[in-house]
Amino acid sequence: MPLPHFLLLVAAVILTAGATLVLALVMGVPLQALALAAGIAAVVVHLSARIGNGPRHTPDA
View 1 (cartoon, rainbow, N blue to C red):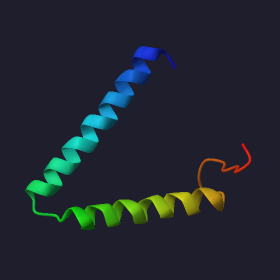
View 2: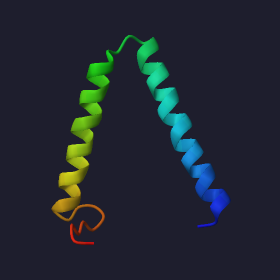
View 3: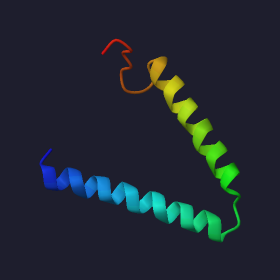
View 4: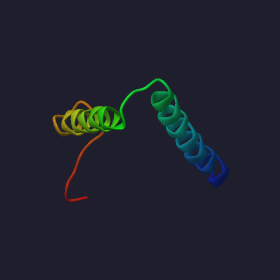
């Protein structure tokens, strides 16, 4: 992947994450609830990858 595309992708992810945080806080969602939802989603994605439903997970790599 060329460097400009990679940097654009990183910038898009950061801007989207910031917009999500601002929107959630404006709507009155507690930051703790948002953090809990993100943590649960991370655990689900991690476990899904470990059982073979996602990208290959090799701890020794």
